Image 1 (cartoon, rainbow, N blue to C red):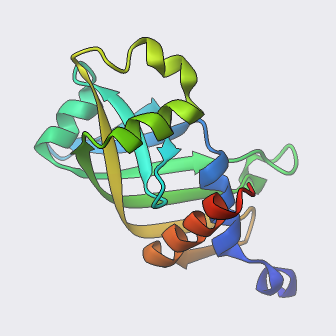
Image 2 (tube, one colour; image 1 turned 180 degrees about the vertical axis):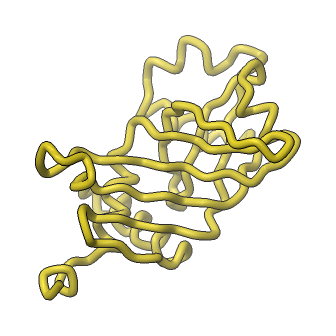
Length: 161
C-alpha cells in the first residue's frame, strides 16, 4: 500500500484520458443500460468530446436522458487485465457547435473528417461530475472532477502527455 500513497492518481488519470482513442459510453433507455464503443477526445478545458451519429442508439438515449458514463481503459501491466489502469467519468452530455470542439476532435481523430459534417453527426461535450480511477489491481480512488479537468488543462498547456 505504501507504493500507492506515493502515486499521483490525478496525474495518471489525466494522462490516461489524454491518451485515450477509444472508450465505452454507457447510457440508459427506459431504465435499461446500454454500452457502446466511442472515440473520445478532450477539449481545451479538459472535458471529453464525442462525435456521435443521430442514427445510433446511444445518441437517442442521450437526447432523452443526458446522464452518461465514459470508461477509458489503458494497457494492462501483465497478462491479468485487472492490472490495466482505467478511469470512469460520469455526468451529462451536451450538444456543442463550438468550432474549437470540431478542430480539437479532428486533431485526435483526423479520419473523422470524412463524416463529421454529415447531417446526422454532432459533437457532444461531457460535463463531468464524478471520477473514479483504478490504477491497476488494488489501486483506486475517487477523484475531484474539477481538479482532474485542471490537471488535464495543465498537461495540454505544457505539451506533455
